[in-house]
Amino acid sequence: MTGTTLRTICVYCGSSIGREASYAEQARLLGTTLARRGYGLVYGGAQIGLMGIIADAVLEAGGKAVGVMPKALLEKEVGHSGLTEFHVVESMHDRKALMAELADGFVALPGGIGTFEELFEIWTWAQLGFHRKPCGLLNVAGYYDHLVAFLDHAAAEGFVKEAQREMLIVAESVDELLARFERYMPPPVAKVIDRQET
Ligand code: AMP
Image (tube, rainbow, N blue to C red; front, side, top):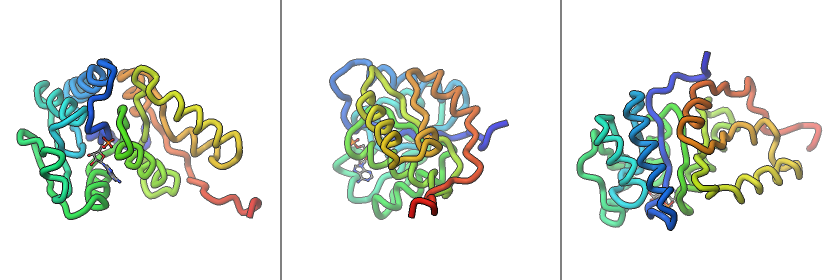
């Protein structure tokens, strides 16, 4: 039994391709795997960087790719013209809200500030109990090693609860990531504030 039925996966990833070839390779593999397993993709709608690569891989494998882009970014991020669905929204906030609504799980691939912000926001919403969907990152070529070490440090220092830290799935391969998403069980009650500590 899983906590949520997975049909559509939201992927946050770089609007750049990064330095290592494996970032693009794994973005392509994730896209192909999603399509072959019948999962739809929701993402930021761009044709550039890892964003464009994963969308192309999904479409080439016969899958469904849905983009969500704010008006103001349409030119800058080069909207993908071949998507299954393309939603143009008013603001960044609307973009993230619609992506969150359309998806049943959230994955961060390597990326920059935009990717970090999106991942942290959706993980925050999980710890607050606003949704019960799996959140994780694909640690391609150790890209997120330092972040994961810092998150463990934050937990060890008492600023992140162990249960909250464990909500973020860290996987080293596409297969591991999807297997863990499929069996994800959200914690029964998301505990945000420990009254004894206040
Ligand atoms: P990046 O990881 O910085 O290459 O950006 C990846 C995606 O995140 C792009 O579609 C950006 O438009 C988006 N993005 C950038 N900044 C933000 C932000 N503050 N909030 C939400 N999304 C953002």
